[in-house]
Amino acid sequence: MSVRNTKEGWGWPARLIHWSVSLMILGLLGVGFFMANFVDDIGLQFTLTQIHKSWGFTVFVLVLIRMVWRFMNPTPQLPAAMSPVERGLAHGGHLALYVLMLAMPLSGWLMSSASPLQELYGIKNKVFSLFEMPDPFVPGSKELEDVFANIHYFCAIALSVVVLAHAAAALKHHFIEKDNVLRRMILGR
Image (tube, rainbow, N blue to C red):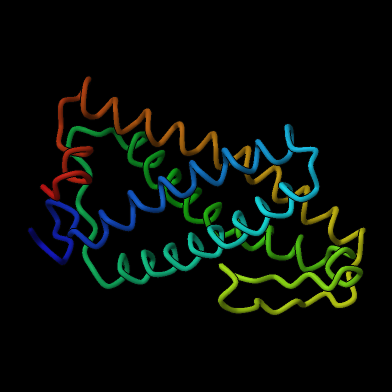
């Protein structure tokens, strides 16, 4: 089991981060949708929001680690049979994933930081109750909160679409193209 990526496959750290972040993102999108559409109880809303923020921070940190790892290691080559358009879509899709995986937690943090409720109720942006995130907007601003809430919402929609396209492309490679693109993200080769 290789630690470092090679031109043929992903090392176990890249695969571990990929699948961990994938599961966290799916969970965060699901919890975010649930909170926004089905939770009326203020206590439950508060609890879910705190958990959501903590896991969002975790995703942000893991994505940064994954980016550093990716720059320090070779990236496995795309299959030779892929057309230039498919290669462009693959690179564009990965770029969109990274941008959105960073934009989501950043916009969520800025939305929470801008909320006037933070100042009014003395709510701190804490990560798993371990440490406090800085708040660049003290006191809060409802207008800024709304701007960042809209960014967070539209990034959630975009991320959902890109994640679905990414998964569909991986399945297409595995079942239709019958190449090793999905297998090397699971097994490393």
